[in-house]
Image 1 (tube, rainbow, N blue to C red):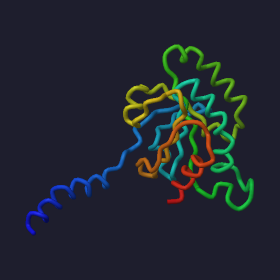
Image 2 (image 1 turned 45 degrees about the vertical axis):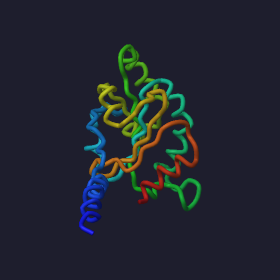
Image 3 (image 1 turned 60 degrees about the vertical axis):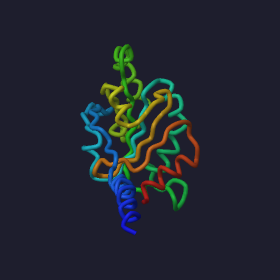
Length: 180
């Protein structure tokens, strides 16, 4: 009997403690389209946040299919009936990472974005020149050609993470994480 108890303790305690560990979203300094500096996730601790992260122009192409459904689910007021509008009480941040030669085109990209994005949402669109390799490692991202979506709790803990092309199931998983 003692052997089984010791075996359960030796094997079970590490598993029990592993559930206590949570990944935190790393601190990322961004600039939004209002030309204001934003530190994620620190500056968003008033409510849960969905961070839509693009690490390449290929990812931006996928993001085009995500933008409207994310907007409708998380930012629109009363669009589409009872289950829409901002019932999730969550922040939504679109973050583009800029590296290398892309930095040279940044002023033109910002000017274009400011013209295309409604001014009331300029605070939700941002860019960063944070070290992408460190960011990818911290978030366990291996494919920068896809957009990544991270749901972050008020304290910076990552609740849910997914990536890739838009599907309604993925969007439901993101919004479901906001409700839990």
